Amino acid sequence: MTESSETPKLPSQIVFENLKELLRAKNTAHESIFKFHWKKMWPFSLIWPQVDFERIVRLMGEIRKNVVTQNNLVLQAKEKAKPFEKRFLEAIPAYLTCLDVSCKGLSDVAQWKQDMLYKKLNHDVKMVRDVSEYNKILKDYEKAQADLVRAGAFVQAGWAEVVNGMSCSPEKPAQ
Image (cartoon, rainbow, N blue to C red; front, side):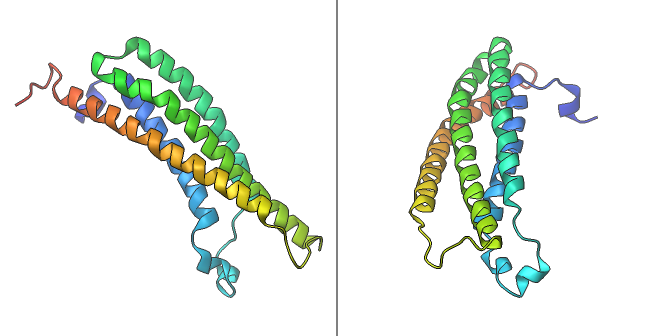
């Protein structure tokens, strides 16, 4: 057996692993919307599947529901946490709030793109499109991403304390 399976996980470790999964899902959706532009051009678009914006909207909704669950988990974890976990667990609610806003922004981007595809299929799109609404959505998402990164810095600082606290725990004396 490995060392991690023998010892029970700290509450902060569980929260951290959950955060990584939520962020991985959100980042994957972000990349599928904003990256790989060459795959969207002909003839590559015939080979690679196109972005499913409706699925991204649903995924962002699921992540936003999980944010609420994680907030509740953090509250429970604070009760059982060791002193070196406190800073990390106190930084998480603000980070989760920023993640929620960022997911909402990404969902808005995907919904706008889906609406444009639907209009294009039904020939409702004019030759000259008003993109000011899309620009506003992108600016809001950009601001939400910047807030998420700033909140993430506090989470990283707290996580460093958890890692240092685990390495200096009584079971493993510091050298």
